[in-house]
Amino acid sequence: MIKTIIALMLFATLPVLAQDQKPAPTLKSILLAQLRSTHNKAEWFVPAHTAVEGLTADQASWTDGKGNHSVGQVANHLIFWNRRELAKFKGEPEAKHSGNNDETFNSFDTKKWNETVKDLDQVMTDWEQAVESADDAKLKDWYSDIAHIGTHNAYHIGQIVFVRKEQGSWNPEKGVK
Image (cartoon, rainbow, N blue to C red):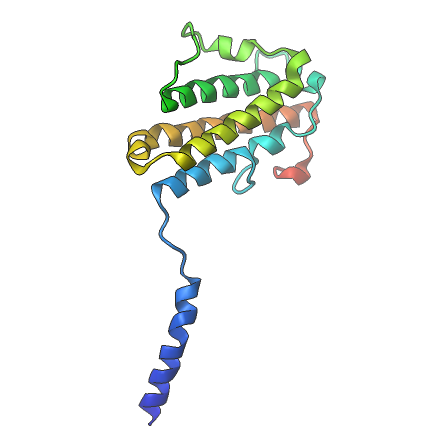
């Protein structure tokens, strides 16, 4: 009798246990999580959306005078490389590039800061949409490149936060104290 009761109790808990299990992650879900965490979903680090939020054009053009890039320059660099790699991913022509990476930083224009912020958000959104609509075969061919794009974005977003901290324009309540 006790064995029957124990068996019934265990059997009754199976549906509850099954509900708590998450489906196994897919390549697509992992890549999307990485892209979103550098775009607008705060997790382990500050995403780009938060990193540039509330910054004025003058603040975006500030440098420390030691040869380091401004927030605006770093944002331009991210836009350039994300757009270029996204065009390749979609089979579209790439933006022309001389091979001099400095050019991707140095084209920042303070008059276009608001447009730069929108462009950064848009290219990151475009990447998420492209990965979302890609089939598994395409993602298997591109997974390493997409993962490196996420890493590249995270690295430079860290630079943006660091520059803002040096400048005194960073609010530590946004994620990095």
